[in-house]
Length: 82
Image 1 (cartoon, helix red, strand yellow):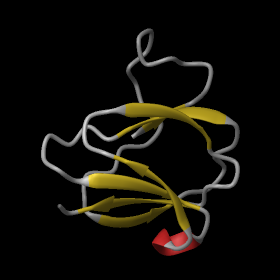
Image 2 (cartoon, one colour):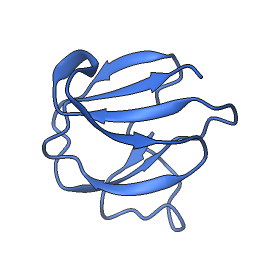
Image 3 (tube, one colour):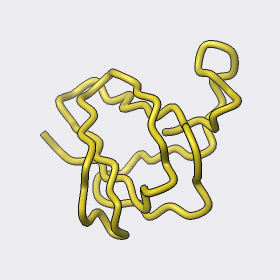
Image 4 (tube, rainbow, N blue to C red):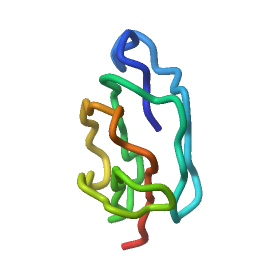
């Protein structure tokens, strides 16, 4: 899931997108800084990808942490099985 930049996770836990299934999820209209969470409790990883359909992935987020990322160059997110 990810939050828009003006809503920090400690103040407003309402995400703009939530992805529950494994695989690639294309994005549109997401620009600027956003909080990105991988809320999985297993060893699943989330990747932020510059291409659509989970291609050209650049950032790897392990299970449970959150990062703040510039989503402007990001066109898809993947959730990968352990």
